[in-house]
Length: 244
Image (cartoon, rainbow, N blue to C red):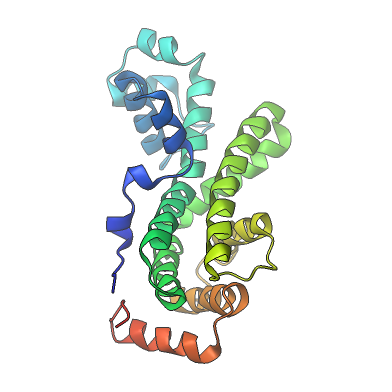
């Protein structure tokens, strides 16, 4: 049987969102890619309002002229970096789901792989990433231009996840009475819910949170029995993240 590793499964060519679309257009210009990568990294430690263009130029080694050749202004650059941050985790996990659907031999094996995705995406140390997503959603409430960009990005992500849910329904691994778009939104909502439990400190453990998600996905969306989920629990507890 197949085994799954989140690290091994997250190859860029499996991504279904922005990276896939960009690949169709050809490789990104190296200078543009470098300044965007630098901006995304700086946004891990500074808010969009705090980040200065001069800091980006210094950290990236890109000249001001080159920056303005690829972006209208500093705000356009920062907005693009924010959108990439918003999309990155969902894109990666949509790609992993695509791999699971192409490799899993049974509903149980798929459910076990989805547990590994949950463990990776719901880590406590991703608190800052969750805060960033919430900040962007709030900004969209007061900035119509940014809201339009974020809405387009979100639609692409939702379409990617919805498509995977449809594939699972065709395999009989997801209930066919589930609306794929609603299911995709539900999956993404776990991340925001996790952040609500981290306002000051974690109010639930990672294990308690992840187990709740397992039950919703497996017994709610996939239609597994409690006994089948218990089989997966035993495999996880003994470190056997595969099925014989």
